[in-house]
Image (cartoon, rainbow, N blue to C red; front, side):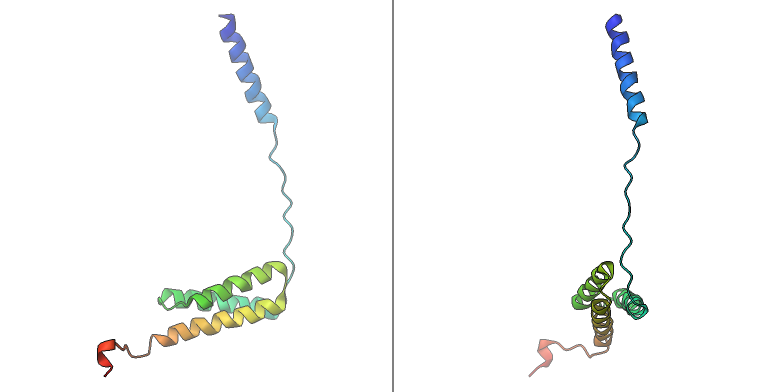
Length: 110
């Protein structure tokens, strides 16, 4: 019976010590600020890509450009954000415009 008591006490001690641990504190580094123009271009690109995706007209180039713009924003590179966000918006618009083109099949070509 003394073995059972020792095991119970050891388990209780482990549980008590585990409760004393505090969660590690993680200091979140603030992302570098980007210009107002970059923020606006990024917001527009996100909305344009979302709209193209909803219409099943999203080009991968638009999606990739948006990801690049978001990464540039995390690094604080406003010029890259604007450049990539504009490309994302333009390619999202082109993808949606493409849906208006007539469907052409190989059998129609003679």
